[in-house]
Length: 140
Image 1 (cartoon, one colour):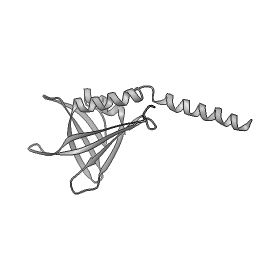
Image 2: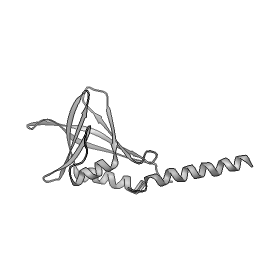
Image 3: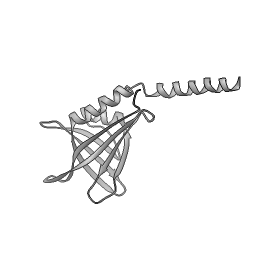
Image 4: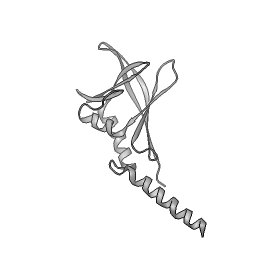
């Protein structure tokens, strides 16, 4: 049986200032039923978890170069080990997080095995066709 989700846990650094950051736990999620999106649920001390949903392709592009406009911006930081910066903006404020590029790449590779990039719409088309076939069987 093939799973329809990919999940992971990752420690990221919440950057407070150039001199200060602290680690937080982030749950990563990807679902075949919503193949264009990834979910990051941030667990901040003393607060309820906060989930951000954004394009899988945005995260993938951000591993190799600056990506995104508006609320989510992702880009490589370099260094050893290589890191990625994720900047999130909302009406309630903004946050900058740093994560290891290899960990994000591994998560995306697992998501790609579930639903390859560029093939996201195929599963929905097959589901629609199957539903049409089953409706035809009920009519007969």
